Amino acid sequence: PGEISLLHILDALEETLYLVPCIHETDCNRMDTCVAHHVWKDLSALIKNYFSGITVKDLLERNKTEFFEELESGQTFSI
Image (cartoon, rainbow, N blue to C red):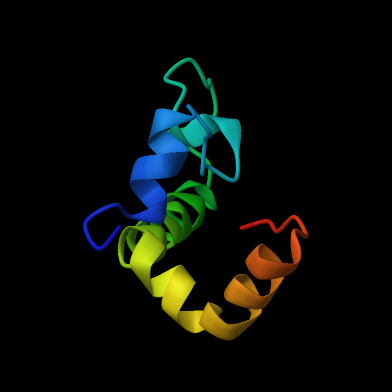
């Protein structure tokens, strides 16, 4: 859990973190002239970096009390 980041999980689930399609698609005909492209690209990189810095262990530690109370009571929980 301490080595598995949220980014690893999202990548395994093939979830995209790109906020706009032109960041991961190369067929955008406005990419060279779009004034916002670099803003979206930089923001997408920040989001990926943020998720890469959070591990499953971090999530469990942040919510330890609530997690174990729900687990013991048989309730379901979500991440």
